[in-house]
Length: 307
Ligand SMILES: Nc1ncnc2c1ncn2[C@@H]1O[C@H](COP(=O)(O)OP(=O)(O)OP(=O)(O)O)[C@@H](O)[C@H]1O
Ligand SMILES: [Mg+2]
Image (cartoon, rainbow, N blue to C red):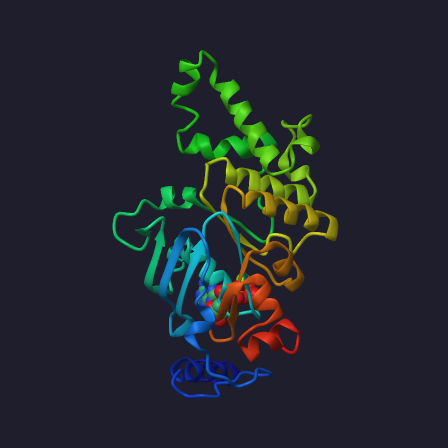
């Protein structure tokens, strides 16, 4: 009880001391974050624009004034020590935090220029456009085929049958085509094409994760959010997911949380570094962030001095 109280007091003082220099937590060098460290100048269009985003869980200020533009058709990596707010941030991008009753969100998030935090936004439609892949693969306990066909069926895209009738084909043809396309796009087709009616839970962990990516692709998303998608996988399965992410970025906007610094450096175009206290400290081109960070704390974090 007393330990909890002390912890909370420290969090609160860190949250309210933003004007004070030298707000340190264990192992971090004191420095004042400069706004230009997060101003990332990129070519092309922003797919999502986050402006002054704050998230509170009860009294806990989990994300503090985060602003960042996410470029389309690229890979954005989110890194930082445990508890710094990476998952919280990711969940704000498709309003998944709405499901957390203690969460309060202030600020703006735009998708394709339209505010997602406003009344009247259809959350089912939003989560179709901004899909999510979780840390542990979570296929439905159904066949491989049904895992992929489930989303489009739920959203009515397959059941209307209009396209199939126009093309003089059956709905089943259309479904099978979709299943194959998604599995191919998720680099899984060759491994499962002869067992589409087997239960998805019989696949290996890496295959299950690619199936979950295929399922995410089946509803035609624009943005794919991934929260440590390879952290439960062995190096070979991880390499397959990394190759896949690289391919996906040609068509989709990918935002990925990873604890693996080498992975972030390998697969991402830009990297955002969150540090303790829910602050976005640095955001920029991945090579710049890893090779020549502005922030000393970011450098310490990347070189393994804390976190
Ligand atoms: N549902 C919740 N209810 C209350 N507090 C939460 C909730 N989810 C996260 N938090 C708190 O918000 C802060 C940020 O958590 P978050 O899960 O976003 O961190 P993270 O960077 O993803 O950490 P990790 O690397 O361990 O996954 C933490 O202090 C955490 O305890
Ligand atoms: Mg997390």
